[in-house]
Image 1 (cartoon, each protein chain N blue to C red):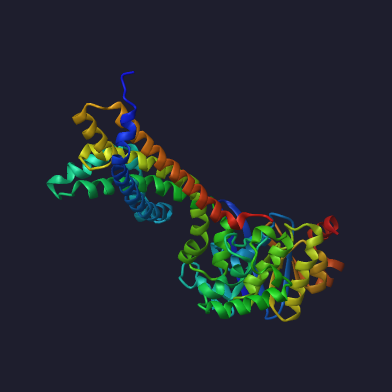
Image 2 (image 1 turned 180 degrees about the vertical axis):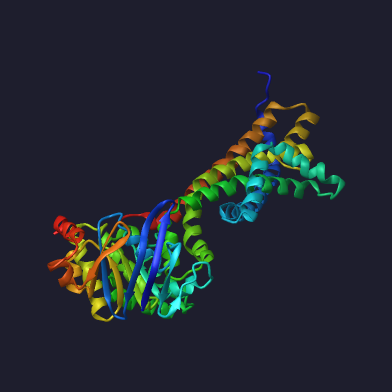
Length: 220
Length: 240
C-alpha cells in the first residue's frame, strides 16, 4: 500500500487547533450571515421598493456569483481602497455570502406563517413591527431551523475557500504541512475526519434545537 | 358607538360592499346574516380596518378612522376581534396568549397582567388550561381563549367573525354561552354567524346581507318571523 495510515493517527492531534480555526471562522461567518439575513429578509418583504429593491439586488448578486469571487473581491478587489486583513475579510465574505441565503430562508418562513396570526396581533392593537417581532418572527424562526442547519453545514465546508486568500484554517494548514512533508493522502484524511466530526456535531445540535423549540407543537 | 357610512369596497372589478350604512349603539348586539360571499365578513373586517374600504367613512366611539393614518392601532385597541379560525398564537401558552395585548400593547406589568388573565380564563371556564399550549386544547376551548384574549384589552366593541363555524357541533354551545354572557353584561357586539338560534335569542337587531348590500334589517322578530324582502325569505327558507 502506498499510504502509511499510521500517519493519520500521528497528525490527528496536531490538526485539532486548525479545526478550531475553521470552526471559529464558521461561527463568525454564520453570525454575520444571520444578522444580515434577518435585516435583508425584512427589507425584501417590505412593500416599499426603496427597501425591497436593494435587498433583491444583494440576493441576486450573491446567489449569482461564486463565493470564491466574492472572497477575492473583498480581499484583493478592495485592497486598493481598504486593506482588510485575511481573517476579517474571510468572515465578512462568508457573512455576506451566507446572509443572502439566510435572508431567503427567513423570507420563506415569514411568508409561510398564516395571515391570521398577523391579523390577530393587529386586532389587539399591536403595530406592524410589534406583530412581526412578537408573533411572526418567533414562529418563522422555528420553521427556519431545518434549512438553516443545512446552510450552516454548507457554510462550514465553504470556509475551506478562505485558504485561497491565505486565511489560516484547516485546508490551508493541510496543504502547507502536506506539501512540505510530501504526505497528502493521509493528511487529507485527517482533515476529512475533522470536517465530518464538525458537521456531525452541527447536525446533532440543530436537531436538538429543533426538538426543543417544538415543545408547543406536541399534542398530549 | 359604531357608525358605518356609505362604505364601498372592491376587489379588482368585483364590488364586495355596496354603499353600506350601519349604526350600532352602545350595548347593542347586531347580528349579520347572509350566505357566503355576501360581504358580511368583509364588512366586519372593515370595522377594524383589517380590510380597507375604498370609499366611505367609519367612526368608532366618535373617532373617525383614517385608513392611511397612524392611529389605526390605537383604535384597534378598543375593538376586540374573534376569528373563525381562532388565530391563537401557537408558540405561547394559553395564559400568555391572553395577556399578550396587556403586556405588549398596554404595557401592564407581567404580574398584574397574569392576575387579570387568570380571572378572564376563569370567566370562560378555562383556568385549568393556563399553562398548556393551544395545540392541545379543543376548538371550542381555543375559541374561548381567543375571546378572553380580546377581552383582556377592555374593548368597547367586540367583533365576532363566524366564531362557531369551524367548531364541532358539540363545542358550539360553550362558545355561544360565553357570548351570551358578554351581551348580557352590556358589551357592544357585531356578530357574523350562521347560528340563527343565537341571533333570535341575543340580537337586538339582525341585518341580512346579499351580494355586498344590506337587503333587510330589523329586530329578530321582524326578520325571522316576518321577513318583508323576497331574498330574505328565500335565504331563511333555505337554512331554517
